[in-house]
Image (cartoon, rainbow, N blue to C red):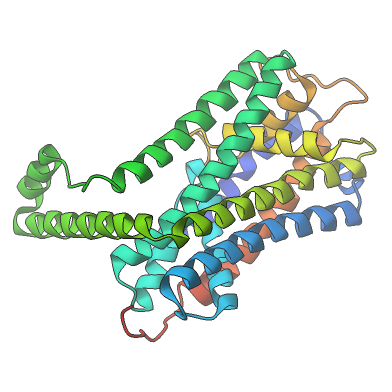
Length: 338
């Protein structure tokens, strides 16, 4: 976990380079004002809390009274710290699985809860990002639109195909990988392979069972709609910051710009999409050539983008870290297996 704390300053490097390259001074960021910053932070925290509410809803529906609703919300919000400090925004699902396992929930059932949570999240983000990509193409931002569509379609398709195949097919560790692990780790390798195969078989069985449950469609649908709303709050956070710079952007354009930037930030290049999201949002809103980021007067500038990044990344990262340590990673007594 310590390396993730070290990774946070690393994410500042692209921001500093942008500020130097485009002559953005601290006073330019401060000029945005306290209230726009607070408003953007609130919008981002609503987004995170809604993610937590969705996770708690899914958990309660499938596992019953496993834990308090508020604690489940806090655990899910805390798990976002892992996404903030990982390329491609992955890892939160492992935290919630770990937490539920500590509570005495079978690993396969904990995995199912995490899958419903992440798949609805990815599907909602993917659809919004695809719409953003299409709009970018229609507005002449061809390279930006293609990158957004390629990234969002690839990630969304991968998760949905894996999810659907798991409901019809029992996965096992590939034979080539089994032989390699057993050869390198001997008896320990055999144990690892057996445990992995057992976990995948149990998880696929649980997935098939829950797919047949009549209420699963409702749970999936509600979770998807909550994800759409949560991503929308993330999207309008940029509109709030932009107002502080004296520029007006409507909620829809703000949501599309942020979701397009989010898709670009998923490229496995930087931690937390640092630098990628910033360039993405500028290119999207200004319909720029991706190799020419000169900003003319009267349109969205780098001060707004850097201010938005501070409000929606660096402030929430501190909050999610505290919740992660206090709730998700704290020692808790096990309950009976569900």
